[in-house]
Length: 156
Image (tube, rainbow, N blue to C red):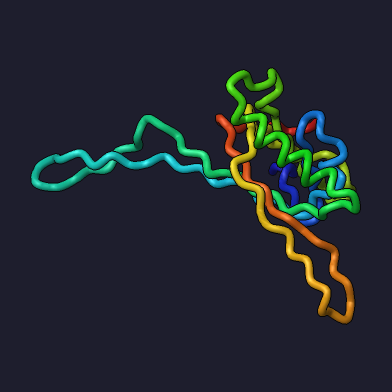
């Protein structure tokens, strides 16, 4: 009889996300969803019917972060500058960065990690500012990234 079953449930708050070299951005990440992947099926005619076979490509959905905008907007400007650098004829060597999402167990220890390779920002969301409110809210923003592929690693 195997005793390798883990009966603890995962908690959605147990994560740490980081973009290589973006420490001032990483600290303010509030939300991220592990992206979905799909393999499109290929319909193949056979005996007056279609038989569906797995395709030969894997499609990775983009990843979106929600982050708190810090007081001097440095983390927002960091992403904005990164996006502007993408448009330059001679883009910098660090135009692509790896994104790592560390999933923690209930003891806040690293359990596994998702590494998204060669990521770059494709969309930077709006920041809502409003003066006609009773209680000030912390502004948040969304940023969406594309990447080449991702791998999952178990931590030891």
